[in-house]
Length: 423
Ligand SMILES: *Cc1c(COP(=O)(O)O)cnc(C)c1O
Image (cartoon, rainbow, N blue to C red; front, side, top):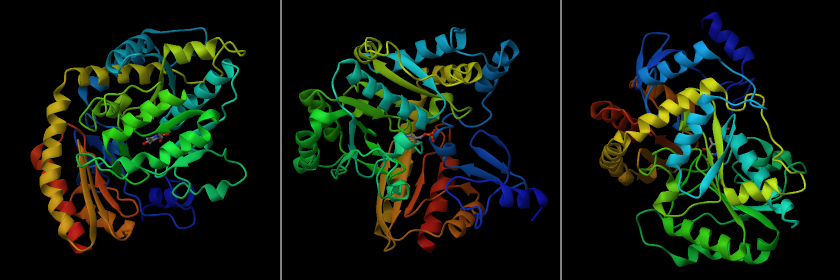
């Protein structure tokens, strides 16, 4: 092991790892298009888009250009009392994409923070109306980030609520939907949710959920009718609806936003991950004017949040460039082709004894195993096959950059076939 790797192991935390028993890491030297180049010269086709983010691939000329030209003007300036063109152009472009009547944007640092902001907006909205609504209603198997507010609405088992008992806010959970996308709708699916509304609707500030795809909590892809029911229950019980589109936003599921599969608009939408095309950390919480005015007319007279690096100009400029690429619309055809190939090449794996289920939607492919995979072993097998795929638990899943070419995607699905058949 060279000394950099030894230093890394001894001193640097990686996501969800131990400092005493760290998992092996691969040093990436550069990345371009859909390829990651390792320090040892090996080249891997990327199946992960760096966790949903790098939708246009790496080292993209237009995204590079956006950052470089902004850098010559200013890297950063505070957003309190100051505004700037990168933020304005980004928000204009963003509001053009999101469904109406979402029209007020709060920019922040990361997906988790965009969720914190959404939760705070909902609490402040009801406080502004002089109503006591202090709980959130959400779904089992959900994932909304790793900060405390976000964690309090994540699946209690997956996110190990027990570790933080006594510190986490207590919220209400309904059963996760079972009806699958593209299959028959089972009306019983909403029973648990209806019960939760009946019992807790009066004290619920908002429902928060991931539309259509429950991501990190299990990569479950559910029926749009569920989302329509959520919307109508929210209307019936006068509860706000927060759609966490941090993972699903910007075309990943085949629609610009996953909410569009159900034809509904939430009161608040959280965006992140692919917002900057995977270049920099930036997130947005977009609300209706009704929500924004409810907050602003409350006793605080303002929304109580303001990150130091709010609306960072470099991040805004690259996000703006990324949205402009999306606006050209090529992603639709690209995502459709990815979906077709993932479906063709992954579906047959269903019949292997070690495989529990295969699911595909848009540019997302999931192979769920019966047993958790041994991560270091499986990771090494994928690397040896020339692809970057990072399984978690029982799930081997991919969400490649939209620009991936057919032969590159076939390399990814071939590697999955090889690895899964060997397990
Ligand atoms: C990743 C994710 C988050 C958290 O985003 P970070 O940028 O990691 O803080 C929140 N919600 C969903 C649905 C996500 O997939």
